[in-house]
Amino acid sequence: MNTVGAFEITANTVSPVTNAINSGLNVLIPIGIGIMATFIGISLIKRVIYTFL
Image (cartoon, rainbow, N blue to C red; front, side, top):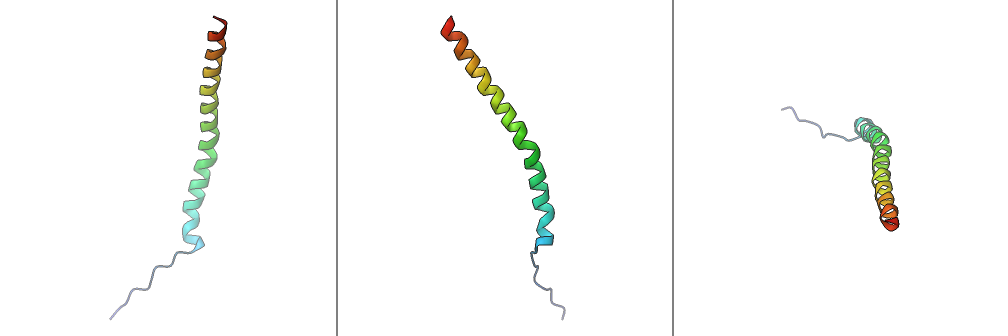
């Protein structure tokens, strides 16, 4: 009778997933910060304009 061995999770099996997550975050975080800064800048400009009107 054949028995199937237990599946072992090692650093080598997990490394492609962690590399994909890290590369995705390296791209998305600067874009997200730029978008957030744009919205904050627009809201600050609106406030400055409305205070002088």
